[in-house]
Image (cartoon, rainbow, N blue to C red; front, side, top):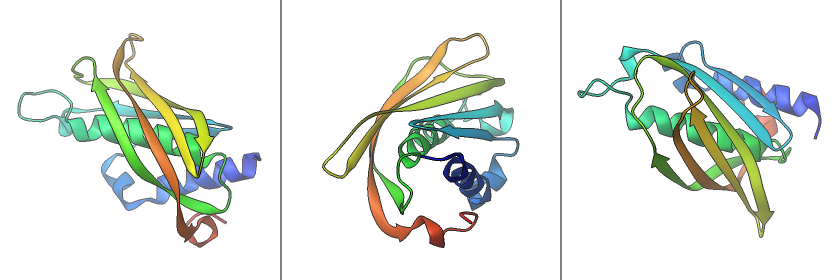
Length: 144
């Protein structure tokens, strides 16, 4: 895979409408790997004053997704399934999620991802399966 493909994937990430809610998010796509950093503020908290599970999922799924997408230059991928294991609550912090490709077979790409806090402690981890859609990457905003 080439670095232009990785840069295009990064542009797709930043142009997605949901990113308007997550200002300051950073992603770095490499071959079979993606790193996603996000500053966690209280605006991401649930009623018990800790990080909402939706944000854990976003970090884990996106980092795994872009690790999978790093090897697919034609089609937009879809998340078929994703399993999360929560390890510890998060308060205001900077989180880093790293997704890595585990395997590819029979049209499915399996990736693992892990979120760590600034102290280096694992706050959540998971594994997902990604499949090719019928949508072309070349039709996606930013993939030019």
